[in-house]
Amino acid sequence: MVRRIVAARVQDGPTADDLVQETLVRVLAAAPRVEPGMLESYAIVTARNVVASLWRERDRHRRNQHRVVDLLPEQTHDDGLVAQEEQNAVVQALARLSERERDTLLAHEVSGQDTRSLAGEIGSTAGAVAAQLNRTRARLRVEYLLALDQAEPPTERCRPVLLALSSGDRRRQREVDAARHLLECDLCARLSEPLMERGQARDDEIRIPIHVDADIVAARQAARELASRLGFSKTDLTLIATAVSEVARNIVRFAGLGEIVVELLDQPRRGVRVVAMDTGPGIADVEQALADGYSTYQGLGLGLPGARRLMDEFAIMTEIGRGTTVTMTKWREER
Amino acid sequence: MTTGPKLVSILRQGSYLIASIHTALDDTQMVRFQEDLVEQIGRYRSRGVIIDVAALDVLDSFGARTLRTIAEMARLRGAVTVIVGIQPDVAFAMVSLGMATGSVVTLLDLEEGLAFLDSRTQRNATSGRPALRTLSRGAP
Ligand SMILES: [Zn+2]
Image (cartoon, rainbow over all chains, first blue to last red; front, side, top):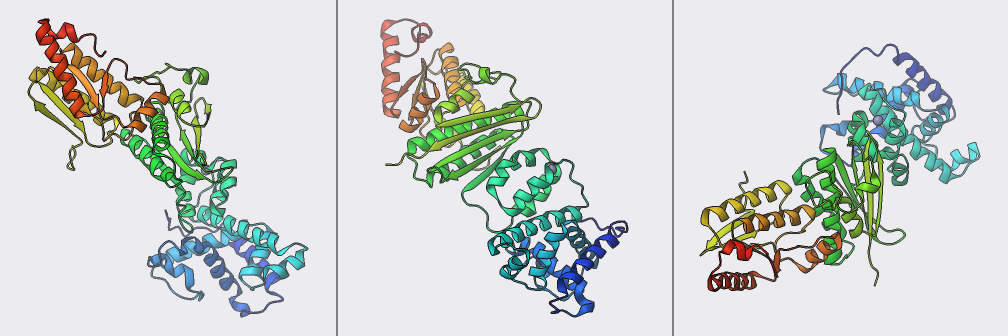
């Protein structure tokens, strides 16, 4: 992560501080667990801990650890400037939450109010409050990283994508086409790294960057290995590997840069899904590209139509100047 | 380029070349293999070439095309090419993909490959015709 050590945040700082303090006064009025003079610092450290839960599991022995456990705001860090940067980022992130989000989060995290009593206050259910808290934490992480990076997202899609990644919501990630956005947006690609390292890594999904010849082999071997866990027959595994090889080669030849995601499926039945996306020129005539014998490079012209024949489902989305996404699925035969 | 185990080996046995692919090859490595093999066919005036692909994980469109190119170039230089060791699942994928090996002879293993080359080159010898022309039709 890039940390810019810049002290000048005058235009933003006071406003953010005020907002946070105002919220705190309101939230903590009925729950005076904390010394009044300590309120703001305490809240900021607590919020920082929420943010830092990002890194908690990653590596307990890294120097990041100090962000996780210490509740003493006056503790000095070796790198005071960096700590100050982080603290400012937390304040800014808190300020960017809606009033209601901030209220609920701080009431829960800072004054320790449980979800049931929070639900009673706002006429909701404990489950709904818990879900809202999760969304708020996810947003806080995103806003924190943006503030730390001092970055304004370049597109309107950035925040929804980062939020979907931060919350770990796979369905939402697909809805906002997060994977493609990460290929296209440098900022989100950078910020997605700490966001996606949250918690345990998914072991039912593999992502392989595709750029050079060797990546074609890496992709097909990774796909075979992952799919073998579902008990596909050796023949099916070879069909899958061959199909992956074909679509990966298409990326290398036509687009130059892309990614293949291989994912195990449970629903509606067991299977493996391969998503191959690139940021290439797109395909002007999809019908033609899927026709046998068509090829603009030296191959047998079997790339896409061949892959389609090898898999059970095959879909292609392409946009001129933007790129192509091939999604193909092989279902496991249940016996 | 690589310091690890060899990706391919090309051995001379009499007037034959026996080429074995030891692992999955990427396209660049496949092309280099093609160049090396064709160069050696010319250098040793080989009459027959056996390519053992048993270790290949897949034979996709590019891999199959490269093998056909090798066979075609060998044919132009007067050598017969036999592919051996295509695994059943790899063969099934090739057929599903819509590829045939075309005019290239494919046989089960090295032993069959050698027997085939012997019979072909024997026939050439007895018929007394130049190898190049006799072999130009490729496989039965
Ligand atoms: Zn973005």
